[in-house]
Amino acid sequence: MPESVGGKLSGCSTSPRCDTGQMRIAFGTDERTALTDAIKAALVDGGHEVDVVGEGISWPDAGRGVGEAVASGRAERGVVCCWTGTGVSIAANKVAGVRAALCTDAETAAGARKWNDANVLAIGLRLTSEEVAREMLIAFLGGVPEPDELDIVAKVEPAR
Image 1 (cartoon, rainbow, N blue to C red):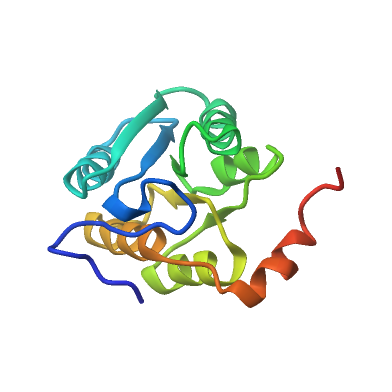
Image 2: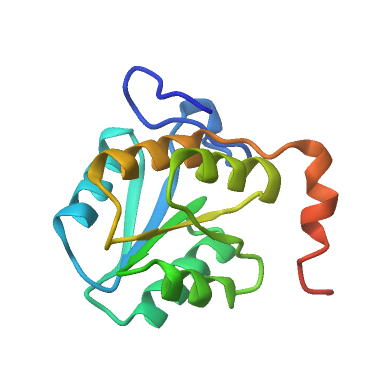
């Protein structure tokens, strides 16, 4: 699993800002909580720019808004939250080019990047602790897709 560098969230694979370890992260949630505040703070502390798409907006709008930011290139990655994480992941995945993964631990988040080239991390607010969220952010943002998996991942993309 990727580690933090200097205690900060690091890593990216396709952004021109990879050399700095900094990314623009789109963030959206249907409710603002202590956990969502901690997630945003961890991203900022990790040197990332956080583009808050919405807080306290409906889960479809949060998921779609973050998905659109990532798909358009306005953000390199996205993080979405709702009570279970399911709604925002469904909404984000409706946007062409988005591969949102609902994760519950760091290993799942690392695997989502490694094998699925996930570009949006979905987090459920109900059961996730701040520490587990931070571990997932480190794993997700530090993860790199396996080159051999990219052709497989391309099979889920819509035909153009």
